[in-house]
Length: 194
Ligand SMILES: [Zn+2]
Image (tube, rainbow, N blue to C red):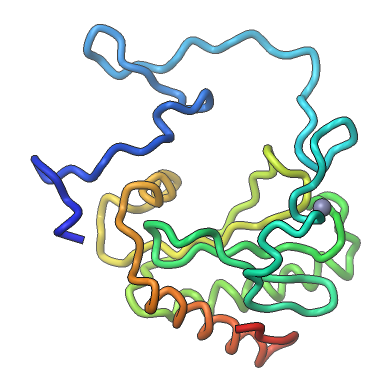
């Protein structure tokens, strides 16, 4: 990690500062909140919504990288990035969070606890953050973000911003962690695919 730190101890800038949804901008040398734009007439369709672009998950995006599955759910990694490990839990069927029936909701709860506990026991992981956003793609994809331990600036709701900034873990470590998670989850249910 030290090798990637540049002058003044700063890591390279993230692309997120150019995003329309980035809430701050520099005005007269001071970082200030952007001026809110007026409301739209309606929420824009997401990928996978009627009237939106096709669902990338149902089209197979990321399917080849799955590390675990059962007949209703699968787990795949986000690309190798700054956090030690970032995984998605997704239903095999095209369903949003609010579409889950009680049986799927109960299974979602069990899988979420198992996955969080397994990832929390990986070396160098301080805590696993779990969240669902769903503003870009309608096919449910729950984020499981393992943040590094003992780095006091990388905590709370802003921790994920460091995913673009920190150097990624070595590929062999990342792949070994994927295998560990898949094998442990398969002791509860489903099949490990790596
Ligand atoms: Zn879908």
